[in-house]
Length: 104
Image (tube, rainbow, N blue to C red; front, side):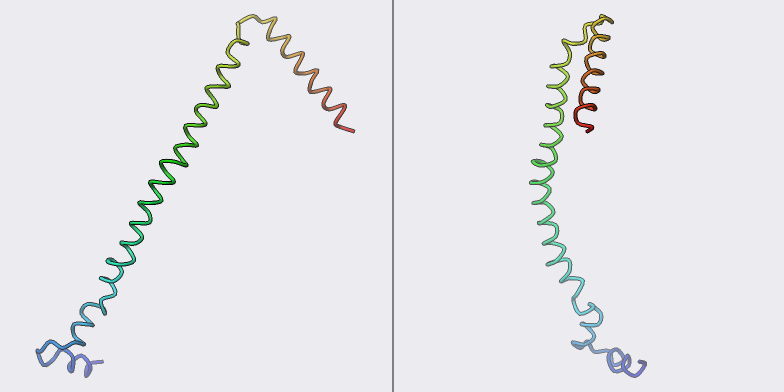
Protein backbone atom coordinates (compact mmCIF):
# COMPACT_ATOMS: atom_id res chain seq x y z
CA UNK A 1 0.00 0.00 0.00
CA UNK A 2 2.75 2.47 0.91
CA UNK A 3 4.75 1.63 -2.21
CA UNK A 4 1.70 2.13 -4.42
CA UNK A 5 0.97 5.45 -2.75
CA UNK A 6 4.56 6.58 -3.35
CA UNK A 7 4.41 5.53 -6.99
CA UNK A 8 1.16 7.40 -7.50
CA UNK A 9 1.62 10.49 -5.35
CA UNK A 10 5.30 10.68 -4.37
CA UNK A 11 6.85 12.12 -7.49
CA UNK A 12 4.72 15.25 -7.56
CA UNK A 13 3.46 14.83 -11.07
CA UNK A 14 -0.22 14.36 -11.75
CA UNK A 15 -0.93 11.21 -13.65
CA UNK A 16 -4.13 9.64 -14.87
CA UNK A 17 -4.21 7.18 -11.96
CA UNK A 18 -3.97 10.05 -9.46
CA UNK A 19 -6.86 11.87 -11.05
CA UNK A 20 -8.94 8.69 -11.20
CA UNK A 21 -8.32 7.91 -7.53
CA UNK A 22 -8.91 11.49 -6.42
CA UNK A 23 -12.16 11.74 -8.37
CA UNK A 24 -13.22 8.21 -7.30
CA UNK A 25 -13.21 7.07 -10.91
CA UNK A 26 -15.79 9.79 -11.62
CA UNK A 27 -18.56 7.63 -10.16
CA UNK A 28 -19.99 10.46 -8.06
CA UNK A 29 -20.18 12.81 -11.03
CA UNK A 30 -21.74 10.07 -13.14
CA UNK A 31 -24.28 9.38 -10.41
CA UNK A 32 -25.30 13.04 -10.09
CA UNK A 33 -25.30 13.79 -13.82
CA UNK A 34 -27.06 10.66 -15.06
CA UNK A 35 -28.80 8.66 -12.35
CA UNK A 36 -29.90 11.43 -9.98
CA UNK A 37 -30.90 13.70 -12.88
CA UNK A 38 -33.02 10.93 -14.42
CA UNK A 39 -34.56 10.18 -11.05
CA UNK A 40 -35.48 13.84 -10.56
CA UNK A 41 -37.08 14.07 -14.02
CA UNK A 42 -39.05 10.86 -13.38
CA UNK A 43 -40.19 12.01 -9.95
CA UNK A 44 -41.34 15.38 -11.31
CA UNK A 45 -43.33 13.66 -14.04
CA UNK A 46 -44.92 11.23 -11.59
CA UNK A 47 -45.71 14.11 -9.23
CA UNK A 48 -47.44 16.08 -11.95
CA UNK A 49 -49.49 13.09 -13.09
CA UNK A 50 -50.15 11.16 -9.88
CA UNK A 51 -50.33 13.87 -7.26
CA UNK A 52 -52.33 16.42 -9.17
CA UNK A 53 -54.65 14.18 -11.13
CA UNK A 54 -55.04 10.89 -9.26
CA UNK A 55 -54.66 11.79 -5.59
CA UNK A 56 -56.26 15.22 -5.82
CA UNK A 57 -59.03 13.68 -7.92
CA UNK A 58 -59.72 11.10 -5.21
CA UNK A 59 -59.79 13.74 -2.51
CA UNK A 60 -62.08 16.03 -4.52
CA UNK A 61 -64.42 13.17 -5.44
CA UNK A 62 -64.64 12.17 -1.78
CA UNK A 63 -65.70 15.72 -0.99
CA UNK A 64 -68.40 15.66 -3.67
CA UNK A 65 -69.73 12.26 -2.52
CA UNK A 66 -69.92 13.34 1.13
CA UNK A 67 -71.58 16.60 0.10
CA UNK A 68 -74.13 14.74 -2.06
CA UNK A 69 -74.98 12.23 0.68
CA UNK A 70 -75.24 14.98 3.28
CA UNK A 71 -77.51 17.11 1.15
CA UNK A 72 -79.76 14.12 0.37
CA UNK A 73 -80.09 13.16 4.07
CA UNK A 74 -80.57 16.73 5.26
CA UNK A 75 -84.37 16.85 4.63
CA UNK A 76 -84.81 13.77 6.81
CA UNK A 77 -83.43 15.59 9.85
CA UNK A 78 -86.32 17.84 10.82
CA UNK A 79 -85.90 17.74 14.61
CA UNK A 80 -89.07 15.80 15.41
CA UNK A 81 -88.43 12.86 17.69
CA UNK A 82 -91.40 10.85 16.41
CA UNK A 83 -89.85 10.81 12.90
CA UNK A 84 -86.56 9.58 14.34
CA UNK A 85 -88.35 6.83 16.30
CA UNK A 86 -90.24 5.77 13.18
CA UNK A 87 -87.01 5.59 11.17
CA UNK A 88 -85.42 3.53 13.95
CA UNK A 89 -88.32 1.04 13.97
CA UNK A 90 -88.29 0.72 10.19
CA UNK A 91 -84.51 0.13 10.22
CA UNK A 92 -84.83 -2.45 13.00
CA UNK A 93 -87.58 -4.23 11.05
CA UNK A 94 -85.42 -4.24 7.92
CA UNK A 95 -82.44 -5.67 9.79
CA UNK A 96 -84.59 -8.40 11.40
CA UNK A 97 -86.11 -9.25 8.02
CA UNK A 98 -82.65 -9.58 6.45
CA UNK A 99 -81.38 -11.72 9.33
CA UNK A 100 -84.37 -14.06 9.16
CA UNK A 101 -84.41 -14.42 5.38
CA UNK A 102 -80.69 -14.52 4.64
CA UNK A 103 -79.65 -16.29 7.84
CA UNK A 104 -80.93 -19.67 6.70
